[in-house]
Length: 187
Image: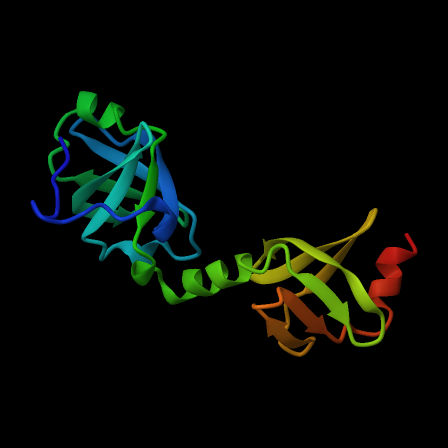
């Protein structure tokens, strides 16, 4: 069973946590699991002491006995109180959450980028060009995918092009490289 951080501790609300990954499969037969982590740097999380696992819609806190880097996206995890294959099977496909203060610097930046989805994008010469649909990360080069009616515009998230991000108004003001917007709109 889960090991709580303390008898008096309250489980935080899921909306105040960051979903870092999930458990796709077992690792061996002694209660160890493979964790898929949505991060650029799995090694940054080898110091985690506890996580929250969503089991049947409820968050359950676990102390971590061992977390060991396997690949760029996976780690071997041993949770306190999970000592058998049968116990570990109950955690398969369950989501893993951490407190946002535990995010690595690069993941904190990624999270901030994802928060701009839904923002309106204004170009200095074209005016309103559309809304940020999502952020695509291609080889650590994030791109805004802007929905402009029936067209999609890919805009590098480069500080040279961004003039202002207004979180209150949910607006991004850019100065796109000459011809970039016309290229997408003319297709």
